[in-house]
Length: 593
Image (cartoon, rainbow, N blue to C red; front, top):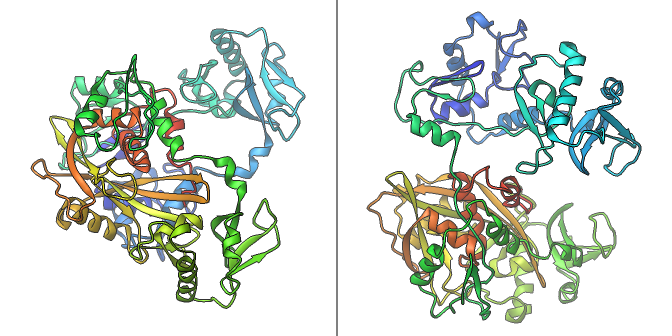
């Protein structure tokens, strides 16, 4: 379907692409030759081997043979881990490098031995003996203080690269990269592409995935080198290369609270509505009030921060350990309630798990099975009662495990989970419709009778992942109950990643991971709530949904993170927006495992 740089890409189905990714032709951990080299080591495919073809005989037929050779277990991710590992080789070698610093910012890393070449250029590079930047060798490198402008620095480093020549810097291309500490920060100078990895500078890349449901001939679908798109109209080519930036801002109130401090929307203020007066008209007024600077992501950072409160309070909690695995955290003061149950909880004095108090809590050794543990902890929860564990429902139970997919040690009543700091998993569905090239999101307004976040906005469907149920199964169930989406449609939802956060509030320690799904809905579909948890639904342009998220705590708190992730995935938040990478990273601030 496309040709980029040295490789050709035919129109491959996602399933075949997956098969290729798991095959050793892309497996650099099991295959050590660069394609097109003269190496002829055999390729391992499942239990058999195939001699790798030479460049002249390396055809698409060879690729399809390898891809289809044997259909392995689709749930086996090891091949993907191998690909990731190849791109993250030799982390232990970091200590062989010294920091390259400009204006107190680390902008790269240079191998200690390589500095011997740079020391010849005393009017360009300066070596400073201090350990401020964590160098294993006790010094760092910077540029000469006389080089104060980006142009001066670029010219000076260029001369060094030219002097050292082809032997040290092969493939000089006269293509330049910006040198900066983080994406979107000031550019200190620019550097020849071939020299960039020798100075360890951070290099941003853009990859384009062109999807098609039509079997176009490969030649007609070709893309050549970096940015030549033959099948796209000139207008769309320009749009892709010069994407406009979308619009967002911020306000500071949690809707439904008793706070009535005014909301800042650009230059004017609006008093936040109370829960009883919180209507769709209020929402649309806030969303459309004024279009703010599209590059301002601060409102999104505020939503993320609200889900990651009080990280400094982590030291107030002690680890909850089972079979040498930390499965939760319990507030030190809360342990006073648990110490009464000596046949259930045991407190061990050691600091193996990093407790600030020098001990951790575990379950009594007589409790060896998941059922025994579940029953024992349930009795404790019932004894401590509603005063300590409000909203006990005896309906939904969460699995207790150290990481997703690992053995389940026991199950726990939903309302008690955050008091034991267990990791809770959930699913969020962004249901959207496309009209005239624009996306519209179906948004739910929660019932005023719900015990948590009454009257606030929510996804079309979402829910915590109960014990013994898969993500896909639970998504279909919640879609039917919360929005009346039939399984024939819900099963088409696409998993697009996960967000995570860590929120500490009093005795509560929330360590949540949410699996995010996108579902393109038919234009004629209208959601209908079946379980009484949603009051109503509205179809809102994604641009306005972005404003709603950005301007206040109007959505249920963790829904904001999934919404931001949707806005990133679908291009409403762009790399050109200052803070983009930091925002993307912040969506997984918790232990996403």
